[in-house]
Image (spheres, rainbow, N blue to C red):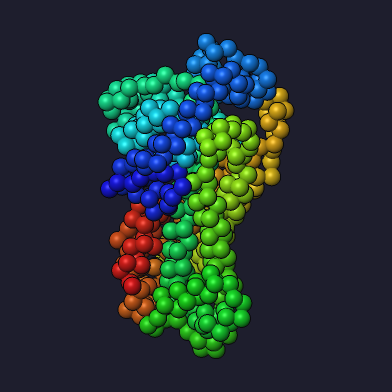
Length: 504
């Protein structure tokens, strides 16, 4: 599989192919032309003795410190080494790989002044699976993701650490094993490699892709819960949703109706009760609002993925070098905080449905879905776990984007904290998947109690997928394994996509 980068047209589908299927990447001819033209402008300014930030000046508060021509290369390698001070657990290989991809795509736009051979090595690392080890903490999100991207850049000069074929090793050794040679940075190149938003955006893209899959799957699990609780379908018919014309709300309501079509377990108003609780009745309103947030996040990430986020930017057509602020991560910081809030609500309403499935005061099922209530506790503590996870999400969902701490002697006096927001959003997605797995386990058990032959065809399909990872509960056992197995299957097998393919 082959994908061409031009800095302008990278899609989420292509990103998924590169991250998950190791699609090969190369730059378009037009991009190489623009990269060369941008580099020529840098060389011209050096030859003319022009003062250009980051080329022959220091960085941040040192922007007024002039650097002699004989020290320009030392300036760049010093930048990478001094800024590589991120801490904490490393990002996953997927995030590291996404950072390589997104930085290469940004540089492919031709506004960064990087040399062709340096950019080619970045692309080669991506194609040959040399994944820099990048600690996850330490970015302010302006001037971009300096510390994390510095760790990425270290590997290109043969320093730092990298993962190659599953083994962690020194960066220079990883390059050697992959048949690559480190580069020596020239003027502007260190800054071109680290001045950008690719850490927060890489985490954000992966969090978004997983969140979208999870939100789609949440509709299916909620439909199975509807059957387990003999839910009322009237709340999902088109009339009430047409008069509140949010398209996402209407789509969720329509999907729920399609998923329970043919069920012998759902009811109508007045059959058993007149109204269901909000956690059932308001699924379209809540899940639909989450889809609205996902649409917003997708739009902002797609813009950022195809943006030039350097400082300064090199404009070859005019010869201008402009110091600006495209490295500021505020748009992504807002989007990531919003994503975390939305996925927290997927988990919140799911946990409330779990409570309705296990609480004998709220249904006519055996207490806590136990086969021997009293002697055995059944899924009582599974609801505790869900409650703990949603409570943790509420802490993680506290917005990072409203915080700012001045840096570089107050030269960089407002920052985005976008990378923290992205990390928290990703953690919320993982917690929410486990909550949804618990709901799925409870809903499947309720279906077994009521009779799976009464399920709608699409719900029966989902029930069978759940049972492939979690056998029917006949007695108490270690449910932790069931939750983790099911959450893992949901993530790795991309259930929402596979189930859609089966049931269309």
